[in-house]
Image 1 (cartoon, helix red, strand yellow):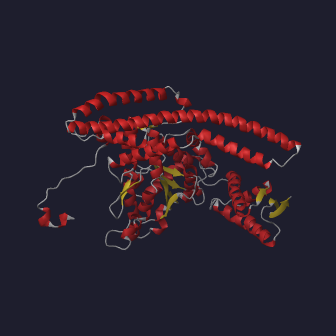
Image 2 (cartoon, helix red, strand yellow):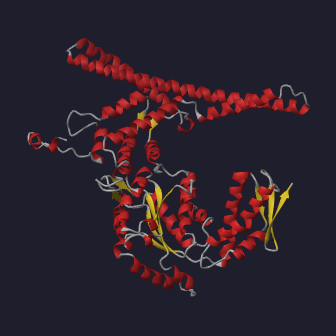
Image 3 (cartoon, one colour):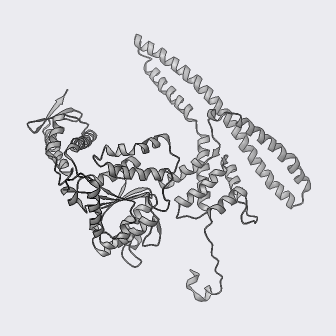
Length: 553
């Protein structure tokens, strides 16, 4: 503000404050030093430990500095590292004050049994009496287990309470000692330094020894913040899964190809390329300054290019709609480029941000799909060069948007006619022809920045039956959710749809239209006429190439 007034600015000296470096922050926290001066950031750690009543491990501080630098680029050190520590310590404090999960489950189970016992009081039958005896035995067993766990929990809570109270008293005494030494109150300073503090230190050491004597696997409470806690906070703030791989996620990543291939039939090369990029990133082997993976999908219409992106979203986010989709047919004019990154200052829409940059800023861990990219204006590719190479993009408001946690997928129909017309067995020869055609459509600097160019195969007749199964499974799920009707499809229906829905020129899309025409339209008529009702179980069969619906009682 002052720099706009030359006379005022001339009377001030400019001092440039640089963002702290990771190594400096770690050194200051762990060693309690700040440039060799009296600033003691170690006290920040101690203050948080005393305030929340938990300990902060040194490697948690290292994780806070490193993870905040990588995943919170819009903020500055040391504030963002301190905020991570504060959030992690407060979360652990809430866990310490909550009932342990094991004890909570036992209490809930006991409550369920007591409700069942109360419901059976008026029932005098032999079966009810036997069940009441079983319930009483189960309740007694649960109470015994809960009593043991509760005693352990109270014992650990008492020890931690002693540790926290003693630590807080020691902190207060240190403050009193500083005041006494500053005021030359030697008697008070001597009493605190050689009497009160050593006594509390012994009490604290005794409590910590008692806590350490409890085996780790038997502990109900955890009083130390670890790097996993810091990673969990980052994951909650950004949506980026930076926690250590759990066994369930490891299994999911190992079988990623298998999971996607159940939805996308006959495109093993594309599925393998995408799955490998995801595994590299989650294993920490990818380039942190580039997107997780950038792919150009080539192939005819209806072969599953967009479906791979949807399936990837389904596996990563459990939601196939969690995808940033940009239809490049909307960016055929030169001026449309501004819609991606936002309008420059002085133009309409400057305060709204770009459709691409704003979406990624709000959801940094996502799949970005550029559909039918060959239809976009050539200037659009100039914008994408920086995203593919450096993993960042500056929007119209001057903010740097981080793309390093995104998966970039671009689809194109370039070379699709070659794939349709090719009848040979040498796939590499076909790939070379398509790549040569590709060089005529896109600039070399653009193609050179893409991780992998994946060529999709055309749909073969033998793949149609599996595709029919996938599509009918969606129909079954849709009808079940909307009308609570269970559809059982006969093999004759699947065979008919696979035969009549195959069109090598249009891929799997004609099959969707065929299912709509031959299955959904007659089903809608049956529902409107009242022959099928909500909650029915219906067998669907093909009779003389016509669909027949039969209610199953």
